Length: 213
Image (cartoon, rainbow, N blue to C red):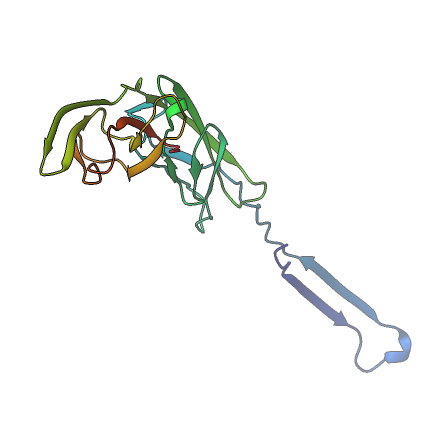
């Protein structure tokens, strides 16, 4: 606690020429105290994003949300963010990130974030926002061409997902071989297979992720 200042006042009196006759002592003592009230901790306030904000993305698109908070206590306290519920992750300074997968297409995902101070007692605040993942459109293959021993085709679909091109020489088996893997390419794009002269026929298919096979 705070120091308690003490003041003392004292006085003694008595006949200086007749000590044996007796003496009297007068003394007073007073205590002066300064009562300092302990500061009251106040809870932090989340200022961004706005409560119940909504973000809409495609599969594979990176979601990044910066969470901000203030605290009126002085001296300034340390604020720490954490994720109470929802997919993704958050740093202690409030950066939320998430990359939706194929299984997340067509879903609405509610995220609850908490920020806590380091006061006594520790106090916190929460906020919620939603990430809507659009339904996934299947990729398509088209604009086929063959020239100088090279086979080309156009791959189209949504922006955001990763794309894989696989090839097989026999549809009766499941022996699909990946010949191209690319992360969030600009669509449409052209795939060219130069190894076509040694096979009587080839079959192609496009898959999207994440995750990729």
